[in-house]
Amino acid sequence: MPLHVKALEHDHTQEFDGFYAIYSTAFPLSEQKPREVLSAMCRASFYTIYLAYNDEKIVGFCIMYHPWDEDFFLLEYMAVDKTLRGIGLGSTLLKQSVDALYQNYGVRALLIEIDSPEKSSAEQEIREKREMFYRRLGALKIDPFDYILPSQTKEDAPPMELLVYHPSLREVSKERLQTWLEKLYTNVYGCKANDDRIALMLKDAPHSFTLI
Image 1 (cartoon, one colour):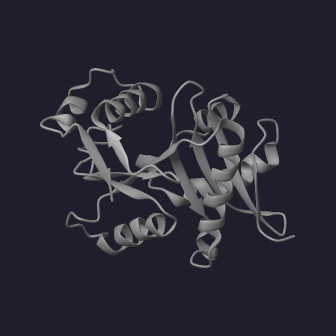
Image 2: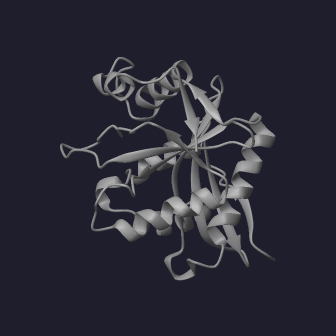
């Protein structure tokens, strides 16, 4: 069977193990969530873990946050088997996952957090490739805007960008962006809606942001 994508059911232990085998090697330990937290996310009504299968073998996944009462989604994690990268699996995985989200919850903006390739880094090439991957699929950058990721450790978060994937959206109001940020900070990262970093991000911001 060709590559296909389907949602992970919370009671499918074998499939969860296949997903976790990729997850646990795809990200630094500092960026990983505990296995029990991932299991709880799988059971939550506002999260879906989409799995990519190739010949019935799990070869990738993406974790989508989709609150019922908001106008956005968040791509929280995405990875493919490291032995199969560079052959289009990631593009198919993301496209089919977004199509499933649209079908189940309607068309919304998909927010994508990435390390900024505009800042000097030892991982400059990786960051540039990651941004180009999402841009080739149609994601646009909020401009002018520097995104501050809520740090989960004592270390300062790296410079970030917030990309938006939507079939027709080309502009975001300051009010709408503020709502997105408050929901991300509170519901995804467990911070307060009046976190000082949100005010810092929107300080001197225009009334409307262009997606470029």
